[in-house]
Length: 422
Length: 158
Image 1 (tube, rainbow over the protein chains, first blue to last red):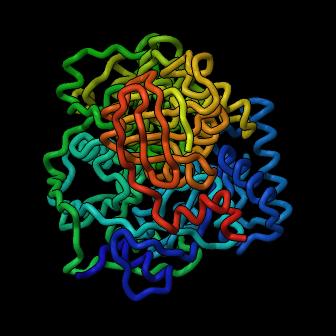
Image 2 (tube, rainbow over the protein chains, first blue to last red):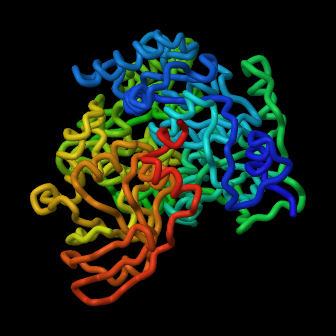
């Protein structure tokens, strides 16, 4: 029996010809990532265990993005501890205020991760880099500490669900709508411990931003990783960007899958996940009919803070005004995305429409700062989680959607269909 | 072997309710424990005693990779967690920091909030003292047992 893409990458990094689902392996790592929340815990463990060197100062990325620019004194202490560690071990990829962006937008943009890599990050959305054809997965701070010290991590080889894509997206539908649709279909533990492997004739029609968004939310179905087959879109994205040469792995024709699910992209409607789980999805047609009044909109995050997300929001907001009493917060995910938004006039569009535009930060997505919700307030967010209390008060509500739906909802003051605005 | 009172929770308990992100501006274990479970069970800290046991349904610990979640549970004094399944990052993190966890669907179904339960770590045998029923959990694979026996991942690497 053949191997899936993920199994091939894990086998190569474990120095094995073949691996099987359930097998425990020790794999070499191409990148170890941490942020300002998870790195301090990892650094404490690293030091407590008595390590005095890192395995490779060029293969560690520390990104100060969650509560940075520092939201309070404690957050400042955490970035300070991370900064001191980065300086002590001369960590090459330390991103602080001024050059930082949201980690999962930043690392692909900088070419720090590429096809065929084996990556761990102490952040659950590390699965984003599967869009590039890498094996990439979230771990905790202790795994990060061990990874920084040894350059290795243990894995249980996952089985896989294959998503065979056909057709192409229509109208305002985006990668966000595809992944919300899938999570609605299989549930928040529908891919527990498994890989989600994406391919098929519809793949070529998906932009890299769509793929990064979809791989990003694989964790929301419980998956170990999401991974996309490498094609011309991947190669065009990586060309001139990747900092080390990538390796293309394709699944074997006789690879074994637990399930094959066909997704006709042409049939995907803009989709909204209602509180308090990403699996509680409704199409925009069902959602808009419910007249859900809202208080805030957030457009950004590691899921939807890239340039095409900003473009989708700007197209809807251009020449229009955010509804009265709605706070609309736009957060380009990296400095480069921010600069591109300025160059393309999107920032003027956002501000003229009545939005506020923030420096890159994860802030509001996880209820950190920059857009916390009060009691019983509702927010349409392009982020990735709508758990109880995720964005503020335990009685507040988060509705997950695409940038187009979020922008249309900001104009209407309630969950709205972007197709009716355009 | 531990014995304690059960605090029962539903399916899909996520790491945001185990320890809300607004408290992640510190890595201090005691400060994290002070806010454990507060968004779904505000009285958790008041009603629990050291050595108590947490029982939940499917997909416990889903969401964020924050190791602060198992740390907050362990530091609260919870002796072990029993659930039908765990989100995979939480599972790794619990083992890596030495919080004993067991997967057992029947035990999760058969144990109620407030029951007195005994768990044998070596055999995976779970006894509900209140009802007299017993359940067999999957013992940890030898590879994982080695990590636990050596006191966590980093100690096992030395």
